[in-house]
Length: 154
Ligand code: 4NP
Image (cartoon, rainbow, N blue to C red; front, top):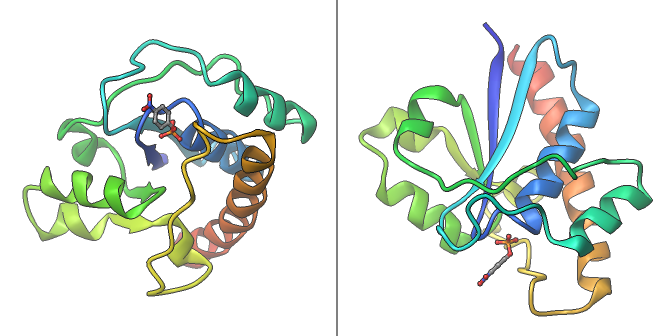
């Protein structure tokens, strides 16, 4: 059975699609499944934001085939590790957890780099291009750390 990792943001069009694409590029697809979704229903079925597609393409990460989906309680059954992009997403996921086993799957993604600092990956949606570059750099570092964590675990 593959190890399954889920990246979660609000809309599933800016941050978590990039996080999915970046982590996928660093892991063996035979061993790991990586997916993403959003806590909101705002963009269900949409392609990633063009600015996320562009910053991904700059670093050879193709996210054009992704389509936005909403987080549901069923995701707890499927996924082993759930990474929230910010504290608001984290709280919205935790609200849906059935038990401690579910809760223990959920982590703030930047806690991988800065444990217990509770830092957010800032929402770049209403900002400019630089915001997407900043998000990419943060997620790339966080995903390197996730790879190390996973290699220790499995
Ligand atoms: P994301 O960014 O959560 O990184 O996908 C957002 C995308 C859309 C909205 C908010 C954040 N929105 O309000 O539509």
